[in-house]
Amino acid sequence: MSQAPNPPILLTPGPLTTSSRTRQAMLRDWGSWDGDFNEITTRLRQRLLDIANAAETHECVPMQGSGTFSVEAAVGTVVPRDGHVLVPSNGAYCQRLARICRTLGRKVTTIDYTEDQQVSPSDVDRALAADPSITHVALVHCETGAGVLNPLHEIAVVAAKHGRGLIVDAMSSFGALPIDAARTPFDAVVAASGKCLEGVPGMGFVIIRRSVLETCEGNSHSLALDLYDQWAYMRKTTQWRFTPPTHVVAALDEAVTQYLDEGGLPARGARYTRNCEALIEGLAAIGVRSFLSPDIQAPIIVTFHAPAHPNYEFKRFYAEVKKRGYILYPGKLTQVETFRVGCIGHFGEAGIPGAVAAIAETLEAMGIATAKASAGATAEV
Image (cartoon, rainbow, N blue to C red; front, side):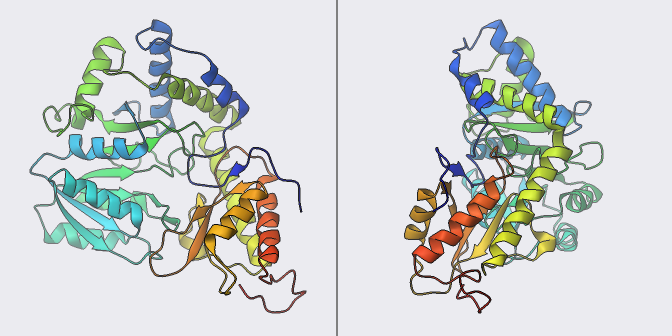
């Protein structure tokens, strides 16, 4: 058996493996109203705007909680209570976005795709042309249910052509895949600390067009999730309205420093792309097939077909891979049995080859022949 990393490497779409510097940043306590902490918040908000080239036109509003809290905050704040949201849906997180709209009492229409299809801008174009009551489009940029990358810029252009707002769930793309506010029109982009910026979970943020935000007072269904109120209070005081996740904020500030030192978005995106390619090629070599067509595969998380073998059972597979030092993700598809492997996180160039070796060893331990073990014979995976 290959030597297992300790602690295990998280090959998931977040939480993910963080650097020792990021974890070290959480060892100090901060006063939530203290000037030093407020400086961290101000600096972090500015840096997040800069990553999206959005400082001239947008505001960054941070929010306590997981990324879903911020998605709900964005929908509830940006979409008026009599608004109508179009959600192109090709996976579990698109379905969650539509559910948020329904739960908030916002009218919602979906365009439904299979989990291996990319959202089509022409479908969005037709839907907006056919229904003038639609006020907003809500798009998941990277649908990590299967790993599909949806065409954000093209859909943004369509929404702008029709004069509709655009809310983007960029949870699993922000910081690794290009989002440029000067080129791509959007009302709001939502992301979180524990994803491609390689912070720890516990904080989301919304990059929201300033001219839109200024009109949003009173839209929100919630006191705690009101982005307008959060922004107005921060603008006045530099402070969070309610107790912030101070350690998470400090860790994200440190993670963003490392992100910039690495070379920002081009370097982060390139590293994840190398990870993704090495993962797909490595598992293909032992007969494990990826689920998506390469032209729509995002370099964030990859879905693989589970071995078509009577000995395969995900719980044992997961436990055996974990024993070898890697934590994977279960499949999210409804029709096909799969498992998922993340490409993001701070684990070095050896992480993916090590994971491939751990998966190969696990399959052999489960009595499932791999292409390598079969010495060129057809694999049973």
